[in-house]
Image (cartoon, rainbow, N blue to C red; front, top):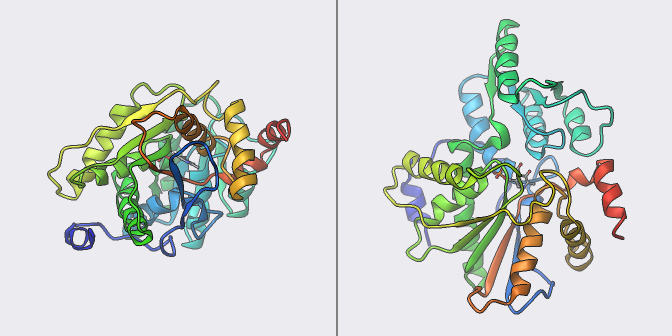
Length: 331
Ligand SMILES: Cc1ncc(COP(=O)(O)O)c(C=O)c1O
């Protein structure tokens, strides 16, 4: 449908990390009259999957073109982005360095274990602001003779967001092949790149979809502006002179804060695992699915009929003992 348009765009080079489209499947859950579909980016090819691989296709291509030999990124200790950056770096024979806030962990469960298996150097920066620590470590690595390439938090810059610009069309094509069209698209939002890419692509539709981002980060009044800015940068980069369609971000499902489960988010993890055999994560997607459940159960007449929730991965975090202890409380 959009094939010739996409082929005409000046899309920067990327390295293939996806192994083809991810599955799009209908949920068995009955939360109302509407049909719910999962777009399964938890099933991407490498490192136990997740949304970051679509961003890393572009970011790693740039790193290689700059002849980098070391990749630095940052994130929370259970960062899925850091895990996937570490494993892809290792696969490309680049040295992965992950900068985390606070003290050196004493437990290495979940993503931290996978970071270690990927051979990442994990540097805890204490109270030092993460950005500042990343700059300092980059300078130190340069003085040791490395050529570092820095990937921002969550891989969310214009290049990374391009991954989700393209993913949007993957979804439309798959739905069309299955004989239906989505009305509403929902995803969880952290560092903003995933939603920004989807919004930029939505701008190309004559009748844009309703797009809802579920904010999982406590202090992000500016998240809407951040998404808009990044989406506009994506359109600029591709020389597409479109204005952005409106979109919504809800902060109603964060609960006590980033990385802290809510009773609703923990219960949907178990419900979805038992009904659809799909694992959502405690930090991002379970809060997004809690929002989907709430919206569907409201049974608003205005609410559209075909809803897609974009599963952005993150499952390994439940093997962190804080998260599995919480989940066991609901079994
Ligand atoms: C599993 C998962 N879902 C969603 C997100 C949010 O994506 P973004 O940071 O692009 O907003 C992240 C980000 O780290 C994630 O790890």
